[in-house]
Figure 1 (tube, helix red, strand yellow):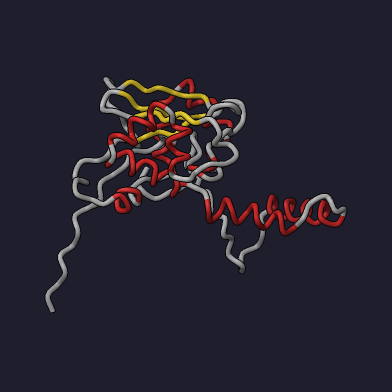
Figure 2: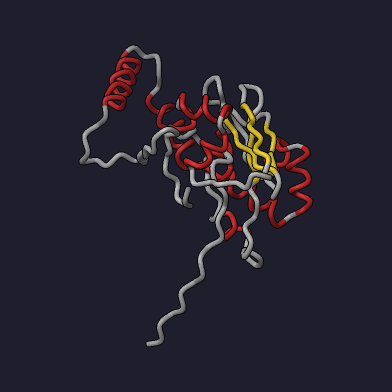
Length: 225
């Protein structure tokens, strides 16, 4: 999979769309049902629209994959933080202020030249919200949840990740009690990059294990005027 974050549907490439739905586009059937349900619950006084807005804003703007990318970048440049992250991910991630629901019990899995980790939740869609935000559609799909276990290399190929035969693929099943963050390999050619620049390279999919992190291409020389 390339550096951008498209949603993949194992068994057939399907793209998910950005949640910021264009105002001039018709709502999907699912969106219409959600809005109808929200209106009904609001009319009955069972939900507070302001609370819903606050919840949505939290997971759209304050938590998400950028938090996880910062954790990865910090581990890449700070060996002592990396040690703490691998020993106790919950505490190390909390050091950076990324705490909250679905992130109470975390484990960091380090990818190496010999081991590649892939995360799935076979029963539902358990996912570390404080560092990855809300799960992508493909993560919750039945094809991914079933095939990631029985054919992880095949699933990875659909994400454009082709691993050598001597690389061991380990599949980890998230649960309601334990969630995982993959620490991808730092790509060669990134020596000298700042922590912020490194974080910009890390994608959501790489922190699930469904992608690798690519080094940026060579910068184009400016044309003299």
